[in-house]
Length: 300
Ligand SMILES: O=C(O)CCC(=O)C(=O)O
Image (cartoon, rainbow, N blue to C red; front, side):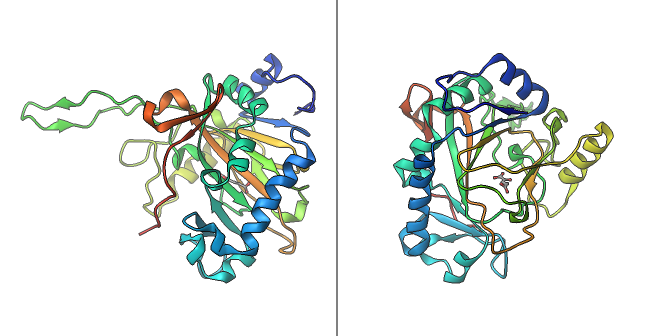
């Protein structure tokens, strides 16, 4: 279901939207941003892409070709990676306009209703082309912080890890279309209702992904989706549309059928400000925060 234009003055999450989110794990807000707002973000990204040295410490992940799987500081990255699918990480840390866009008050009021608390940007990704990412669940990679449990000591005095790690599902994601999505440009795919699948426990007992090269978590969610008869959908949004998804929703990027077609998108991940250590939450306005941190480390 697509919800009406956010350009109306209605800024709070409606009961109907919340019920739809609880049932399906996503929300589509059509025509939420004005063309001028979208153009301003595109201009920032275009400027950086025209001169990759301007990415400085910001990291970029090539998603295709010989460098796929690696991470580079933007300024030091091989120039050819900017000609094909890449993930530009955390522009919100350097570009106040990108931060303010992702923390638009109209959007964060809706997110506050979904998360039951003010959202905090913990990560942002800009895509120029489709991501082509395999189906996944975002909490595997960005598990929201949980309150620290008091350390327990064994009989021998050793500190014991909590036996049952807590699970916090307060992670929501916005994907803002920065242009109209063509079906051949590798649209976002998603599986309505998949957020209700019980979270996968990795072999360490917790919920954060283990990069052990196995596909157990993916096999698990696909088996559960098949059992539940969930269907696969593609999102063909227009510039200014917002697709919000629950941190447990299974989603990914479909294959790009026409590599000449771009799919400019800003994806932002939000935890709740209340879930991070107070010193880590920088307040931008009443319902919008971001995580205080530097750019991501390079992969080892
Ligand atoms: O838009 C896409 O292609 C998917 C992005 C995605 O999976 C993510 O950012 O978690």
